[in-house]
Length: 319
Image 1 (cartoon, rainbow, N blue to C red):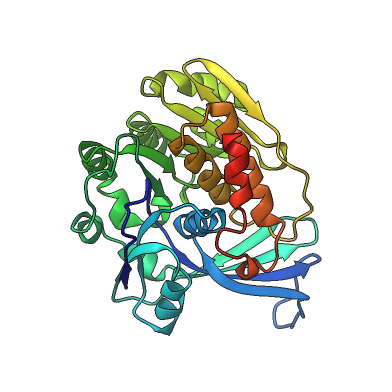
Image 2 (cartoon, one colour):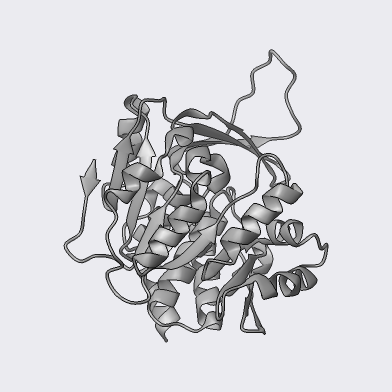
């Protein structure tokens, strides 16, 4: 299940992919034992790493995706969804993880996710295949660590190895299933201190910092950053805020009325990191991330988005 472009891409993505089954909408929650008919549905590739890789595909931007799939028929289907992306998808002895997202009328989502192959993703299999950074400034994005117990156990080693290979490190952990305990905060701050682009949403940053106010939370985390590293707060429909070398920059998000916002933050990561790889300033990269996220979530079903359809957004980031 390995495909590689002749020219090595600047963004390497390492993390979680799964199958997303999106259904909606519901008003309230049905009683046990009843049946509810949905107006819309889509089965598609998902997971933080998967969503980012697909957003790069929509932008017409090259990337390389390292992950795993299960050994069932769903695993084969999932791998095929990345046919136009350079991938290294190891097959493991487990059922493919499936996440069912129920969209509520109010815009909130409820998820039911099976453990499956995500708990088998192993750094040893990836390390055998990954090579030195193709050029100075190439970025490795690590995603979904709290869903990947075998990766989490050696995350410090993963980050150190990637840095020795010459990569900048970008990090999007997601929300810890066990909550923000002191042990989890300490573990996470250790990763943050070793990364160059920390890409979290607003509630993750405030929870990590133990501050209710976003600006205070970002200032509190700033001393933990590497020199010239960037801390990004994705703030949903408001846009995004970045902090680098003591300078705060904000970008507003385009107005959209999406049915399904799942993967918005992952799509932001694609636009932001692609812009950074091409030398964009923090302000321009934030704008690129916001535009990419808005473009993706405005579409349903997303499988209809063509490769390179959002390439105009790459041109905007350069103008």
